[in-house]
Image 1 (spheres, helix red, strand yellow):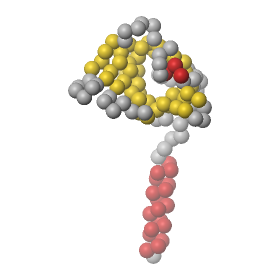
Image 2 (cartoon, one colour; image 1 turned 120 degrees about the horizontal axis):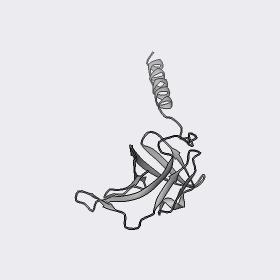
Image 3 (tube, rainbow, N blue to C red; image 1 turned 180 degrees about the horizontal axis):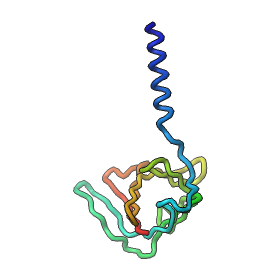
Image 4 (spheres, rainbow, N blue to C red; image 1 turned 45 degrees about the vertical axis):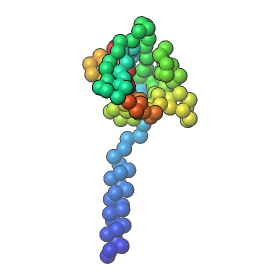
Length: 133
């Protein structure tokens, strides 16, 4: 009986953890709120004290997330990516080379403002980039 209970609990844990995750997928909806051209407006960083947003010095910088999963940018390090995948409601991956290199970002979307913060690799002191549509 004890062996049965252990197997039953293991099965329940396996089923619960296997069904809670959605696989990452390419965006295929051109009307998703992430889709479109976003203008780079500010950078956030902290050097140990409370962080601050600083305006972008060079105007005309942007990122573009297309509904088909395509990605383009004239801002480093974003400019090295060619596509993206949404992982869940707060994470997206910028894919540099399919099957090998990618950057994981935490994103926040409010009205016409998109904020991206590197998740892997992570900024130890805290950093983020802000874009307006």
